[in-house]
Length: 280
Image (cartoon, rainbow, N blue to C red; front, side, top):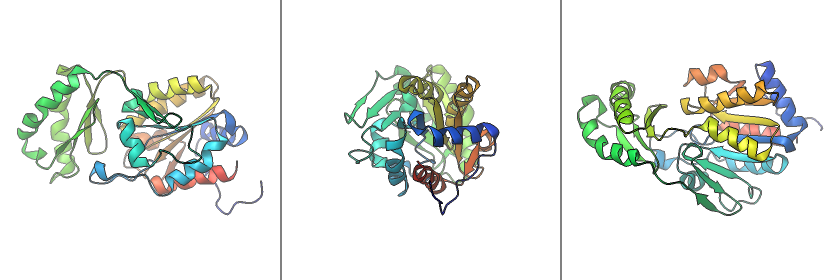
């Protein structure tokens, strides 16, 4: 294989070391699945301004031909992640799959189309109530509502006290979600209301089964990625090697504590993917 100027970071767990070794030894049997915001794209104050890190697409293009599949699993609508990621029509990414809305939607690069189920009626009902609910809380001034199609989210990053607004709204939004048969998913200064039965762990497990992968790599940055981490742990318990990557340096300690390898943000994560690709 020759020498490589950039040594690969070493996973801190034996299971992670096994996962990386399996990826390098049998890449054609591996699925590499990645979150979008905070993982392939830097977190920015306005989510509509999010774009993939400049190194992301080149790293995926280098990696994709060697592995069984590359998938992006995101809470965003699939079409939005494709647009913000710049994933459509890229030579080398002909078989990329984007699982949007936590797996409820699917975009395949092969067809360029999105498959989507019927919307959950509770989302529309909660969306109608949200503006009035936010007006009741002084702390929520500056918070804003993001329309996500099959889900709706409240961001507090622009509030005068972002963490205070997040804490003040958490319980009322949990009540709102419960009344309309939805789940509340907290994240990094964002609270998302979405239908039950949608999570990244279910999406990842089903996709790994579909592809028939023997090794699974998953990278994420937030609480919504914990179900995917748990799915990889479950697959490892059944004898399938896995590697868990955390993007970020401790913003979400619950995720970092479960990771095999913590990389300080999207730039480091895409550098890692490129370094893996260079060895295949």
